[in-house]
Length: 87
Image 1 (cartoon, rainbow, N blue to C red):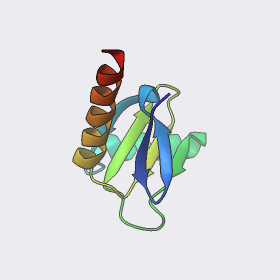
Image 2 (image 1 turned 90 degrees about the vertical axis):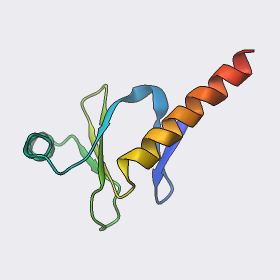
Image 3 (image 1 turned 45 degrees about the horizontal axis):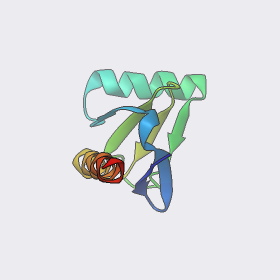
Image 4 (image 1 turned 60 degrees about the vertical axis):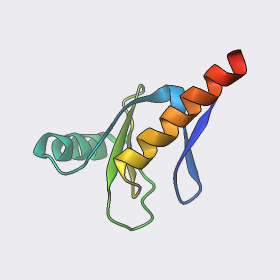
């Protein structure tokens, strides 16, 4: 199981990530609010501005202060590391 650093020493399992999105659009803001109401939000931004929203296969919504592109690159690097170990 590979973990991705999503900021401030917090990690998420790479294979559980469904999508990584920006928090700026209205549908994503509604998704965050619905998840807050349902108790499925995990805020790991440590009081900083939310710059990315990670949605997991368990429908948890993770708020991070790291840019979406940075997290996506970390996921891609993890995928490449897995391919190297398989060879």
